[in-house]
Length: 216
Image (cartoon, rainbow, N blue to C red):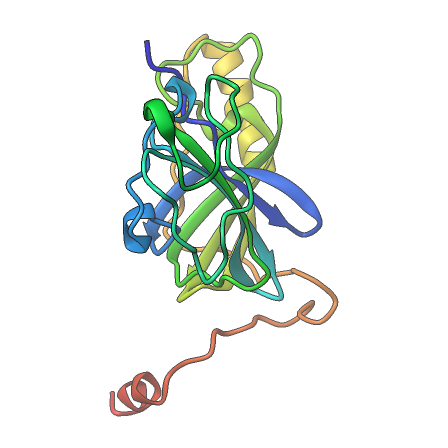
């Protein structure tokens, strides 16, 4: 029986969140770096777990754990620094003998993501006692933020914690899963840190894109 994929994490405004929803393209993909990831167990069926951070409005990859049956290449110019396999025997990173799945761990100082779309992040899981089917719905988290990015730059954010509390109340009342749809657009300005507080930041735009806008 396959269990749920262990979630990626996102550090945002000084807190660590689980990545509970993705709508868009541009997050880390093993195949883009020549890695064929394999599942070490049913709790990580896609073969990797990523740790992201939003810092100064930029989405970056900070950490990565990945499993493969082949030697692991550098990722964003960084070598893997740890290797072990499921049977507990530590082996050299480039010698996955006896068919063992090698785990490589990476830590990045500067690995910006060119992601466009929305990320829903949640913390403080409060879903014990609720009956749901499939993936955990976002209202099982007490604190939820909806983050919108353009080319890796944070352009809007919505604190949806109050909506999640209402959805939990409906689920408790109805005894079934409450649906929460992602809004088409964020409804207020980003408040990320003192440098950006009180004004809406815009992502840098290329000259080509800027001239295209001006021509319309």
